[in-house]
Length: 68
Length: 137
Image (cartoon, rainbow over the protein chains, first blue to last red):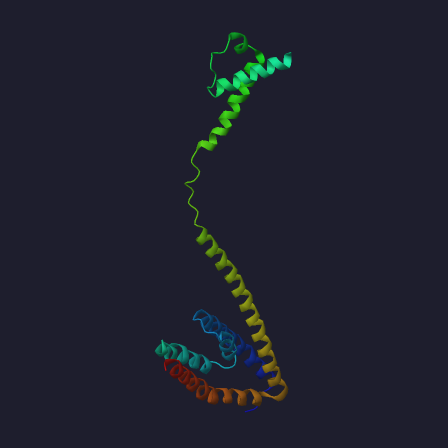
């Protein structure tokens, strides 16, 4: 699948705000929960949508909840 | 002589004000203009100083609350700056990532996303579980 430059730019403009919002939410949520790696979660959140968010929710809401 | 009279009048006035005079004042002193003037001044000062007789120790100041509020404001400001720094860093990372996509083609974006999608769950979730087991033991 070869995309033209115009199509690539369009995808970038559509996806970037979503990635930024996801990353920002994960950053704030991890900080609020007292996680010391909140910066890493934030950067992780801007790399992929929505699988990275799902991974974050599994780790924080299921795995870490069981730990507590 | 005049000075001695003034001193005598003032001493009499002070004795009378603090009710320490052993004998009543004579009319000559009482009708003296200097005596009347100084007596008025003394009464004015006394009225102004009456405010000190009021109880001012009933003030209820929550010092700990004020300190905690100050700490909250300081932390909120620090959080805002940190968040702004995170957004700036994210924009730079995204810019570099998409610039590389434009230079090397969309194929690079697709491959990198596939790597994130396939490797990230297999790395992060087991590490979290191991960490949980480690802290539990």
